[in-house]
Each structure stands twice: as C-alpha cells, then as structure tokens.
Amino acid sequence: PLTSMTWAALTPSCLGSGRFICTRFSNVNAVHRKLFARGNSSQGKFDVVVVGGGIVGVASALELLLRHPHLKLAIVEKEAHLAAHQSSHNSGVIHAGIYYAPGSLKAKLCVEGLDLAYQYLDKHQIPYKKCGKLIVALDHTEIPLLDNLYNRALKNKCKDIAIVERTKIRDYEPHCRGLKAIWSPHTGIVDWKLVTQHYGEDFKKRGGTIFHNFEVKDFHVVHESSGNDKEGNKYPICVSADEKSVMTRYVLTCGGLQSDRLAQMSGCDVNPRIIPFRGEYLLLKPEKSHLVKGNIYPVPDPRFPFLGVHFTPRMDGSVWLGPNAILAFSREGYRWNDIKLSDFLEAVSHRGFQRLALRYTMHGAKEIARSIFPSLQISRLQKFIPEITIDDIQRGPAGVRAQAMDLDGNLVEDFVFDIGEGELGKRVLHCRNAPSPGATSSLAIAKMIADKVNMEFHL
Image (tube, rainbow, N blue to C red; front, top):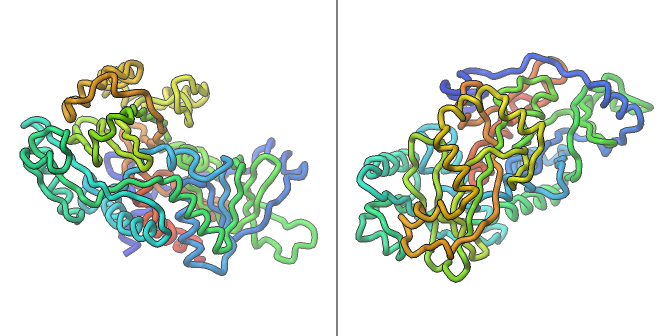
C-alpha cells in the first residue's frame, strides 16, 4: 500500500529515515519580479505543470493524463527537444533488476518497469533487441560475489535467471572467457531517447502541451488575479522562464541534473546535492563488433559504487565499452573542455564530495588516467575477450549521471521526494532523485509518482 512507502525513501546510511520536508518559503526575487512586471507573457493555464522533459518527467506526465484525462497538463523543458541529457546519453540497456537490494523500491520498480517497458515497446512498435546479459566472474574470488548476486536476483523475482558454468559461457558469448556467469535472458537494448519521444507524442495526442526552450528560473505565488479573470486564483502558481511563464494549480519537477536547484527555488534544502559524474565510453571498431553478441558485465566490486566497465551492443550495431566514472566540470559536461566554473566549484566545495574523494582517492586517480589514456582500459577488456587489441577501440560518446549525494559522501541510491511548507510549498512536489535504472523503470516510477501527486494535490 502507498502508506508503506516512506515519503523521502531515504536510506539510513544517507539522510536518515522519515519525511524529508523543506521548511523555507521562497518569495520571487527582485530580478524575476521585474522581469514578470515587464510583461512576462503567459503561455497558458494548467492544472499540473511538469518541469523536465526527460524520460521520468514525460512518463509521469503521461501517466497523470491517463488517470485524469479531464485535466490540462503541460511539460516545460529547457532544451529544444525531449530527452536531451541523461535520457539520451546512456547505454540503452533494459535492465532486469538483478543488482538491487531485495525488497527495495529500486528492485520492485525495475522488475515491474521491465515488463511495462516491453509491453509499451510492443504496442507502439518501437524497435528493441532482447539480447540478454552475462555477468562474468573472472577468478575464484569473484565466485562467492556472483553466487550472492544470483540469490539476490531470485529474491527480486528476476525472470529466468540462470547460472552458467565455465564450459557453457561460450554458448552465449563465443569470444568471452570466465569461470562462471549469470545469464539474464530478458535484459535487452533500446534507444531510450526514441522511447521518450514516443511518450511525448502519446502525451500530446491525449491533449497535453509541451513547451521547449523553457528554462525555469522561478516559482512564485500570484496572490491576485489580473484583469477580469473570472477564475480568480484557480491557478495561483507562476512558473517563470525568461520573458515567458505558465500559470498552474500544481507543479511536479523531475529535473534530473538540475533537480536540487529546482527544489531550492521553492525553498527546499540544498541537500541532497547533485554531483555530476561523467561516464565515458570507448567504441569497438565496426569490423570487430562480431566479438560481442549481448551485454557482458563484470561482477561488481562491492568496494566501489559503480558497476564497472562492460560491453554493450547498441541498436545501430555498434558496441560500447565502459563507462568509467569521473567528476564532470559542468552539470552538462560531456567532454573534458566542457567547463562551467560555478558548477565545478559547487561540486568540489560540497562536504559530501570531499569525503567521497578522500575515500576513493586512488580509484579516482586511476579512473582519470584511464580517461586520458584509453589504452589503459585494454587489459581490463582483454580479461573478458582476449582478441581485443588497442587497434580495435576508439573514443566514443559520454553521458553525465545526476548523482545525489549527502553531506557524509554517501551516494543516495533510492528515490527522494521533497515538498515545502506554506502556500507555495504545498503546491510544488519535487522528484529530486530517480536513480538508475530510471529509464527501464520509467513507467513504474510514473505510477508511483502519480500516486504521490494524487495524495498530495488531491486531483
């Protein structure tokens, strides 16, 4: 039941349990008050405005419209198209839910989300490949970890998971070596940007409105209606961008890399802070793509927070190798020379990041070295597929992960929702953290978010 889901869904190791509520009330600042007074043009009035055109925001808007077809809903997105950042800069994997703690919300939503995703893909004829995944143990020290992972997958009710012994690994991946593996037949690949675009088209066909190039700068309460508006204060919240705005009864934010800043606009606490981690991929040259049939993953090292370098086939036939994990110098910094000084200083001055950096100094230094010198990755890749050489790889794309972090340097790995108090706070709900695998889980997450929106706003 909904009441069993803690509002903040924060683990004790992160920010503590219980309801996480911001207590400050945000008044419109002088700059935005002047901008609004100069004729900030209203783009319309809506019952709910969803801020953020990534996959979670668009899926949530679609779910709300499916439940409430009589309401007027809008999505506002700061870029020129949907899925501009995390939703398009990712590995494209449809995850089975193997890694997550049994009983956790992440595990539940991933397993449910996988089924919902395949149903949606089939219904809308969106291309995908159910190519499966091997999680491969390379030495005897990894076998107990692999067995624990298998038991976790069973508890999570991941479908048709199987143990593969050494002699059978090549039946699944002819060029892969290892001592033992887990086979996940329902892991797949898809273009999540394309999926998000389908969500958006579905949303518009059902009467929803999408505003692009709408970078939210402020939320504020409009206490008095202007002119002869007979509806009075039915739409009391103004969502402002540069020289334009929308009026709404309620706001849901799903801001990804900007989620903490959006929360602060309605008076919420700065923490958990978003720290941007860039994940860089290498590409296997096309003439060697035949070496990889499906997803090949290492056994995750429990000492480190990320899954490690893996082999991922793509819908276009290419094969991605990676990613690493290094601090991005900008919230949307996909290259080393993408630098925004304010973003960088904000990240490195955060007490949580400083503690994390001290905890993983050597590991972080190695990740940076492998980023600068891709050849250093080769030995890791050759442990799985010995035929790969330095001549077979080239630099590939990158993504930036919006990693929520607490003040102790813990990565916040579960969902975080935040609201304020007072007239503004009670009308703005923030989804501050929708952790990986957010794309796979997007339709399941959307159902949970819609439940929370209904509970708070009484739609």
